[in-house]
Length: 211
Image (cartoon, rainbow, N blue to C red; front, side):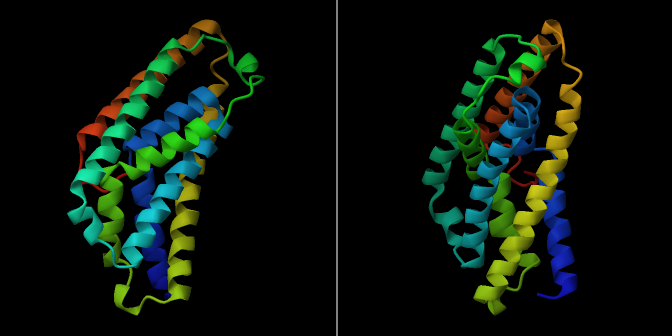
């Protein structure tokens, strides 16, 4: 892949990851409520599903999005319901100031699963990798080296975009030092997660290319 091709792919992926959508909503919500570690775990889940779709696209398996509609519908509903459940949990979370929350050990597995389901069930992610990506990558000249190079560019750009959101949220968390502020944060995060879940479950924005 030429330098020009790498830059085009990186730019397209960066716009894709930074544009608001269910994945971004979930990332912001969990990073604000659970901190950087929660955001990183969710990012790994998001990226895992993204790389799977990228691999399918580069392997010429775009037909799976067309021929397995029922499977994608089921995954989408599961992902949406899971995000809504996380939103309900966030609403009910105790309003503990951030200084004390930071001492509570949290398992990253739930955030990782939430990230994977969010990305795997997001029609916009499917559209980007199986529909728009071929405009930036020469599928006919795909080799193992090109495959790895493309995956590396996409993975690096996805991680960079997610880290921007995580860092911004980490700074914002410093503002929530009181019980009242944390209660407001928990309920805002809950609403955002529920909205993201509804968007995923309903398949809203299938003609868009945001995360």
